[in-house]
Image: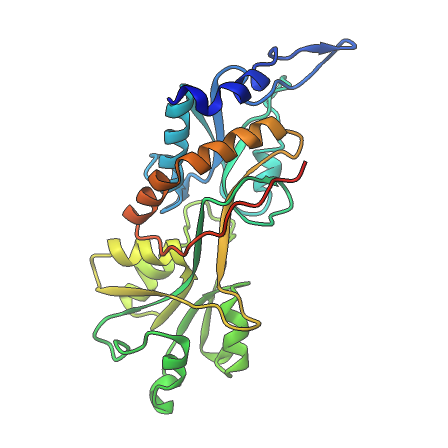
Length: 290
């Protein structure tokens, strides 16, 4: 670990574990016991899984190693109630929160304080090579297909995806197979849209978040799949910055994570590239709110 990297902030975090105030226990500051507690999904590759195989797992491990802290996880499917059951939940019979760091939130996410962004990616379209779509590289190329061919296409789209507006504008909604990113089945995972349904021919074009599309296009063996990042258009945004999330009150801890992100940007990018994540340049970090 670089000595000068976090020394000052570690001093701020080294508060007494469960200090007493007026007879009431106070939740200890994150990292006071030298444990990095992260909140992650147990089955959501390429982001994270219980076996530690996702890129968010690797980045959290990198941070823990540099801090010289132990790494612990709270596992919960990243869907409705995720923050309530992880970042804001306390251990039973304790004032300690279950975890202190959500390793992936969209920039602007309001249920947690955002750290500096650590990557920027975009939604992507994916299709199987050799099935008549090989020259399609943009959404305009898709529209330029012969009308009879285009009308036969089945599109796999997640409900709430920014691609929905484009499909609506171009009269393609009747050809959509809808997918839910937040289901009640913990065994389901977003990558199934590509690894199973696109590869098997159930759908012809899948629209998915770029890291998911890139990873499963790369790892699927039953079909040769190409994933193409979508370019944002006027009034239609497909690219988003991804940050980490902490509790709003944990300002010193947020600054610590900001510094780890900033000083490890090269290593983080290398990890993301290993997973096939389509990346765009990040803007300069914005000052965190006081």
